[in-house]
Length: 136
Image (cartoon, rainbow, N blue to C red; front, side, top):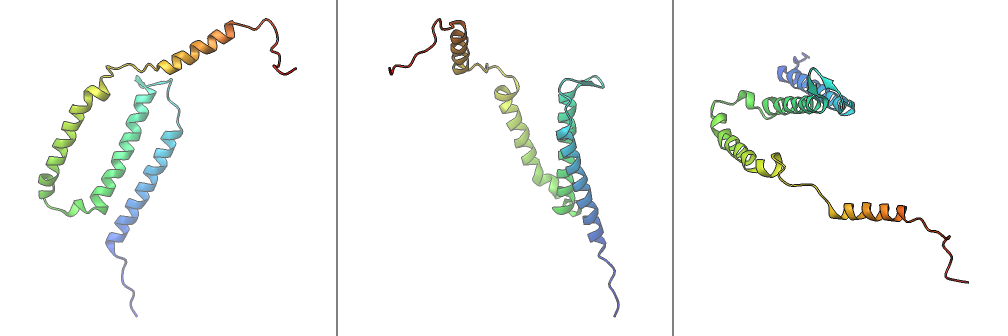
């Protein structure tokens, strides 16, 4: 009885699986790193960390798109099908810029201001007599 050789595509999918596992580990490591107050290579740590996390997420998405969704083996027509999606994504980004990107609004919360004023007023007005019970 002869043994059949392993399917060549299965080794590719195994490599992609390990690459996705490695990217997941990188995502966890980047989540544990605290770079909020540091300057790394002239870039604020938060921006660098966001760039690294997004780069890993894009790499994972590309692995899935190219191999598991079989886009590597499709013809040129996939660009024609994806062009309306790209146009809509860019249009949505441009349309949402005033609401999200510019921050023309303030983040004041009158409830929090009132609470802080009440706490400060109660701290300033120290009771002269100890509180007594109404029941005698």
